[in-house]
Length: 218
Image (cartoon, one colour):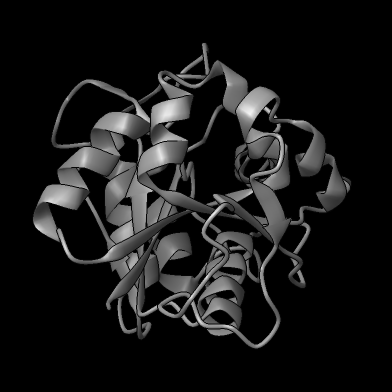
């Protein structure tokens, strides 16, 4: 069974923290590949993105290039509408009907899952891998879901592979990873102040930001 991680976000810009998190999840859970899915209009970010959807997708493509098991997906950008996880999930499911799909997200994002459109349907149709984030306690994810979903959270079984047998009653798997404390907000701020961003984004992304004069004058 093919296993695919769905790693969504604004990616404004994509940085080495994103890449490190995806690489660790892929390695530790044994995922075949990870799809990076930049949103068109982030449903939960009222201020929207700073860079255009096309620029953010191109930066994701550059960051994933020549990285084994990483792919950029334009499925949300090309839809030209607000990004809802349930719609994205069903589109990808139609493309890979036999794959086991996992949403990958940090615990900080998972704490807001109750605000997602049809989040119970998302949980029913897809598994989740929730990772730690600097400044957030991963165990807080255990208290997010209530009712019939209260017992759906568990640690990712040590030594198991994402394509193997997983506890059938569990929908959300917690996976502590060594994370880098990097934020897109801080990168945009550094660019706006004329400071270097080497070591924070991949060289190809840094070159793209410079060439297209993104995040300047902030």
